[in-house]
Length: 364
Image (cartoon, rainbow, N blue to C red; front, top):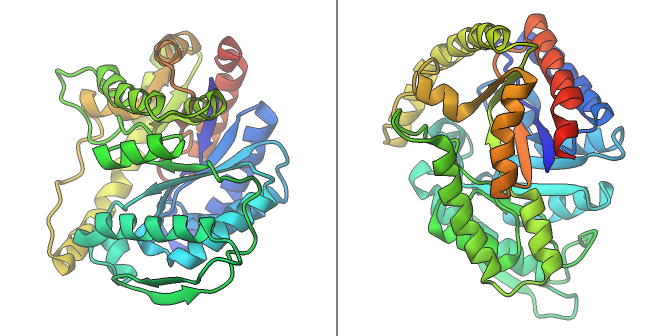
């Protein structure tokens, strides 16, 4: 199994932006030193969710100059917010700079606020994802002697005469990772030989449901489609090795009791940040003409058991053993979820180190 670090951490004021960015750079360096397989960064805008996530490609390029072993992932790139030609170029360039250590998660987006900031209609995001991705694949496939790729989309019009420069580090490029939430996205990942994000973290399941059963259903559908797509064993191994389940908040402590107490302190701070943003979320929904469900109660048992992984090393390892037996290749973990205060960073560093020294070796 692989274990990856999710670079999250809120800035709650403009005066905090630089400190949060610096803290997450240090967090990335610690992750590589401790033996984690990848760092993943989000693509989010306007909320302070993670200040560097306004351009994760720039941030990943900055990290790539300092980290020489670890992989770099996007979790996930909101494709409708990116010009498709620019997206095709930037992915290839970053793939070259990291010498093939790039994984590009893709999705249609999460909130109306991010969409309207870029002039995109939230209701059209899914269709725009498919439209842009179709064009991006055509651009990546184009050879210089081919006829120009002429395109007209809902937002862009143009023609690419020669080719996308640079090319990917390896061809064909197998580093796209869709969120396998819809049948179409799951099938597309399987058909193209791409790993996938298994979306068992959203929405939170009912209190009576088992989150692992939820995960198993999604993973089973993806794996069945992948094995039926006729790929080589090398492609199948690559896909399953990087197919990812995400825990938004991971906290490991010497005992279950300590982990429980510290997790609730973390979640109290997290809830304060969410509540502060709620007014702005509703303004954006009104402008966009949509009304989404309110954010779930982060202290509810169903939210915690779906979004969080916490406990002593023994308890956490026991939960992850079920993932290994299922066949999940990569577990993505947020050790810094919530406002990134010095105390939050201390708890995150403690948890990440304890996981690396007492949990990871059992799965390597």
